[in-house]
View 1 (cartoon, rainbow, N blue to C red):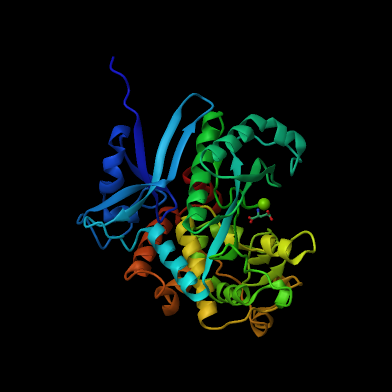
View 2 (cartoon, rainbow, N blue to C red):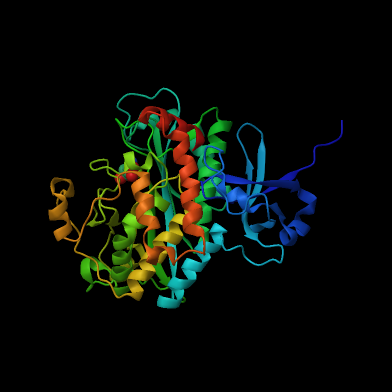
Length: 436
Ligand code: GLU
Ligand code: MG
């Protein structure tokens, strides 16, 4: 028998938030870094259920997926298997960025923010997921439930470190078999790359430990969902933190205040990108500690945008920690696209000189729609269809994305909705738990 040839996969996290790609013999790496592997425009319409949404490209066209050594993952798994893959950039045959490449869309959004503020975005995606199988009773934050999965949790922490991600903490979350990983923030597109890597590494390590991990937005509507909370702050070219101002509203600097205001204004239109599955809207309901209104909260886990706690009282120490958290996201979203939408919304707020409403302190679910509106708030869309309407009908939002992106996205999601339209909520949750 001849020896196996080591392979590397060039991969992309696509519109469906799925990671797809092509492999090549590892000894071709140098060539592939410039030439890439062949890629097809219509691949962008492959849904999370492997259907294909209407595609303007049909069978026509060729692209290249070029692996990026900055986003390389080499794993040695507990079962003895190994993995080697790299996230890549999708480019044209001439080597120009393909406008619909989601890493490129995020780069464009970050460049807009940098032009406006001179600041880089520093961000971290905090993930919740569940292990499938029987769960222990009363195990919310439970010590025993943590110990029961210690080998997996330690293997996962090591694998993340090996992939260049710095774990901050890992815990047994409140829900049945639910765990959470918190990682330290990264600058620019690396934050979104890290989110993709974290999900894939978690799934691979779980499977190597005989477990199955799902990042499904909600597995059981009688219980809590699996959120993705996107923490962000601003850092200038000299590495100084620009998010905090002790004199600013709720401690926010002018940049933060205007950015947050933009995110809140456009939240009902961008939630179609950040919480993009049919069942995401079962999670985005009041009293689930997710996000149901376009409100700012101070340390409030029901707010869509939360000003996070800091410790200590020295202003420079506070400035380093001060960050906001976008809670209306889940792991059905491509992290690059979700972050691009948030950054554009915030940049729009800065460009238009918006200021944020005061953080809410009451339970907005007790207010009528009129009372909410009089305070400048609204209930977020309650279905994916309603979210897509809001997204599709906002010319400002459409202007943030490449030509043709809005109809493309709507056609993609129409195919996904078609797949689940005759399912009960339970069946749909189960279908999404299989794919995410
Ligand atoms: N599971 C909640 C969510 O769906 C978040 C709970 C928390 O960590 O605050 O976002
Ligand atoms: Mg949590």
